Length: 538
Image: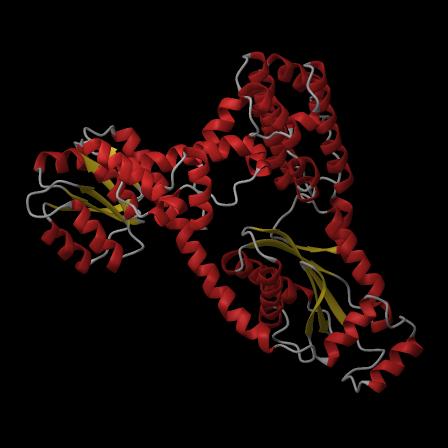
């Protein structure tokens, strides 16, 4: 739940916001009010607000002054300005103070609710990121000091068959490395596989988080059994090996369930644990292969503990997909009807006892693509002109990993295709969409042709041809032209330094910006500003 503080010197405006906004729907637990800066500061010192709704013009101090104070002492607060005046200088100061939004009175309450909801989404994402960074830092320090142990290397070599599974070879290695068990010791293997990471991770962050999973597995799954170990076997996969003289698989399953819940909460991932049968060391490799096969076939169940007995439960749905009907709806442009029926069909797959077989899911994925390509072809469109490269090459590998992932990916592909068909049919200009995207992202220094093409779901080469044909210049030239036009406006109407303006329009190198500007306009930025001011004073 969240807290909001409304600051306005007009009592009727405050009451209007209190009554007009559906705070309960927004999950706002507390709505406090203040009528000047002094009261607002006292309210913050008593209990900081998550969202500040603030008027700008007040008799005892500007709302901009309050926002600057809040930014200094309570940087987690999101500020939304409300004002009666569409003053450009106010808007500039609001942007400089990193406010969340700037809205004109009288404000539409539904629009305000939507803006507050977006602010809360940003706050929620920030809190999750702080939690992630805290977890990451802890396990980074552990990972830095971690050194591979002899026992871990033994099991890795065995699983990857660097050490043969023959009793003779195993006995020789056990004796050589002084392992605390024999060829006859019984072990219970637990194969742990990450199904999806809910955070984008760099390669380094991924290694550290995988170590965090390994460490947590030792603490929660292997905690009661001496000589237990959690061994990484591949990216996103662990093997917990438990020496077990007696069969206590039920206790292990309970520990696995707790481990899964912890990983969901602290490590931002979904995963499954697969419990095998007790085997001696020579039988470990074949048992691990059986657990990996169980994982490959599991495309329906997530965050579950499964056993080998679940292998035979996977099946194919009784009713086939509605491809002929879906294709016809797609041709007709009945997007809502198509997506609703497709969603219902895929939801029905989740309700199948034991889930569906991985092989069936792969075939379903291929048939969906075939249907989409067929409809595009019937409309005179080629897939490579409609979809960006990564949509059909990089993402499908993750999409077919689980039913849930495919359920997100397929509607997205269909929507992109149908939007493209509709765009062509209605003569909607892709170029206008590109221009709008460029205007919204002029400040990105690394804005590339590929980024722009991906934003409109088109092949970069195809987009380049279309854009140049309609506009008469390449995308790169148009981007530079728009940046120079914005720079001219800021130099004429603003008070930013030339270096700040260069950053605003996407140039980190001031010298390069000055050179480009002079080439485009005829004079350098400083001379341009000076000439404009002299003209205004004349």
